[in-house]
Length: 250
Image 1: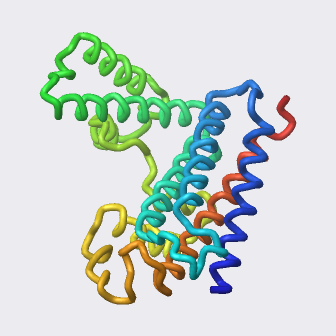
Image 2: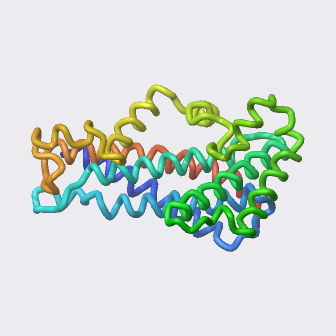
């Protein structure tokens, strides 16, 4: 129980620091597109963390018939971690202006094709609409004309032009560049993913330790606290990087 108190305290402190910084930077004009997206993603990060706090019972609710659902907390924790990786990749990771533009253009292509896939699932034939064709041609041409992108091998270019990838780097490559430990990250990600997708590991042991039923148990408290520790870790990393990026801007 004491560990949960400490984990929740860390989480509240980290979220308070991030929220305060976000509010302080509100209204500051973004000098670059990188700053603009940093502002959006940092806000998304804080918002997700707030939602996690609504799911995780406060320490004083232990023993008072609170609703416990570490599985949902884990799902949102994965969302927050992925948000941090995107934040780092697009806004913090140092690269040339040409490479940054290529990263952004690849995201534009992925965004467009994701929308096409979504609307086509409703039999809307969105891909055949003139507007969709124009957007696709434009984003592909923008990517093809990028000097950094043209230095990639023909095989790599063909792969990325399919639009299935939003990033040029793998998850582990982004994590390593951010100074994180891949093995430690992979444990967190696998744990959270099994609950996000309701894989067997996320429900096979519901009968053990009275977990996954909305009631308090040692397992629920322990795993919720573990997620709060991870949330605090990524919030503080993002806060430091966001602060450095917007330092001296008015």
